[in-house]
Length: 341
Image 1 (cartoon, rainbow, N blue to C red):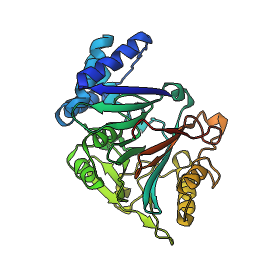
Image 2: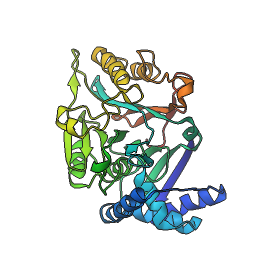
Image 3: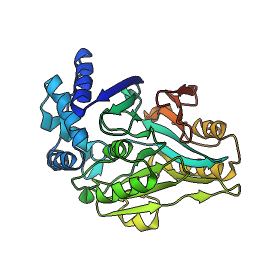
Image 4: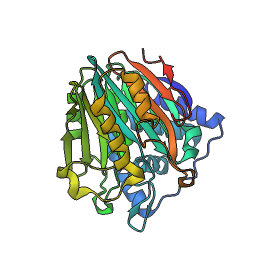
C-alpha cells in the first residue's frame, strides 16, 4: 500500500498526484461504452456542482499527465457504480464487510476490503489536509475517491457496493465520492445523513457513518430513495451495525438487482453479527478475530475465485487510533498508523 500525504488547495493536491503518476509512468488504458460515457458526463457535471474541490483535483491531475479530462472524469464517476456493464449486468467486482460498534464507552469501526488481488499493489492510504476542509485519512484502491476513512473529528464514512438495476442508474455521485465528501465536509453522523439526503446518488450502495459519540447508521442509497438503518444492541449494552454487499432493509428491497449471495455476503454478515452479539470487552482483539476469519467466514476466499481481502482496518473513533493489515488479515498483522493523531 502506498502512504501518501497531500496538503493544500484542490489544484495543489491534484498537481501533486499528477506528478506522482508522471514519475511512475502510470498508464490509464480507459475503455468505456456509450452508456458509461453518457452517464459519466452528466455525473461529472454534478460533481462539479456539488463537490467542486474533488472536480478541481481531478482536473489538476489530468492537466499534469496530459490525459483528456472528460474521459478521465467519466471513468472516475463510473467507479463503485457501473465501471463494467455487459448485457444489462453490472460486472463491478467488490466484496467488503464493514461494521461499527461501541465497547466500554468508546466507538470502533472495522472492515475487510475485498477486491481482485491485482488491486492490492496499487491501493493507497492517504492523509489529506485540504486547505478548506477536515483533515482525514482515506483508504482507497483508487485515488481522490475511496472506500473508507476517518477524519480529525472522529467521523468514519465507508461504502459497500450493492449491485444496481441498470435502469435505475442515474447521473450523480457514486459511493466512493460520497465517502470522500463526508470525510472532508462533515463532523457528525447527523451532518452526514443530511449531506447524503441532499446529494444526488448514482446507484445502489450502502454508506456506513459513525462518530465518536457512539452514533452510527447505514444509509442504504438509491437514486430514488434513501433509507437510514439503525444499530442493534447486544445484551451487554454495546451497539453495532453491519453492512455487506446487499440492501438489507425491506424498505429498499424493490431496488435490489441481485437476490443472490454476493461473494458470500450473507455468510460474512452472519459471522460479524454472531460475534458482535457476544462482544463484551477487548474490542480491538475481537475486531481482529472477526476480520481474520477466526469467528467464521470473512476473508477465506478460495484461490480460484481470483478474489481476496486486499486490506483490513480497525479505527478507534474516540482516540483517532488506526490499525491496518495491508493484505489478508488471516496472513498479515495489523500495524498502527498514527498519522491522524
